[in-house]
Length: 81
Image (cartoon, rainbow, N blue to C red; front, side):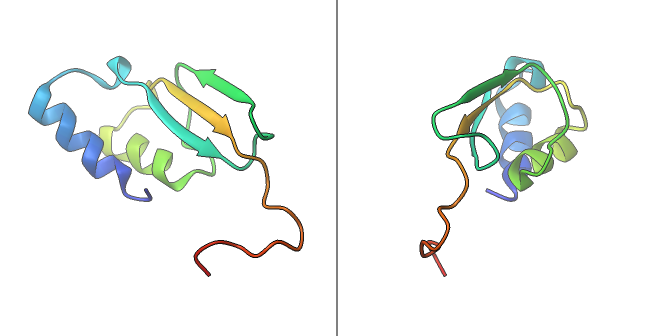
């Protein structure tokens, strides 16, 4: 996830197209569970994967759909730790 820009850069080079023709969909802990946010452009924010994509294609003009998964519940065990 954190290096998603490499994959996006490869796909654009291999199959053509432009970053504006993409729709990047990713989960976001900053949004409440079930909330959606659609943007046509913007920075990568706090999401490492989106920052990687913006950096690799060298534009913020990338449509994206953020899907809220909410914050990690207090006291719950974090996955993969």
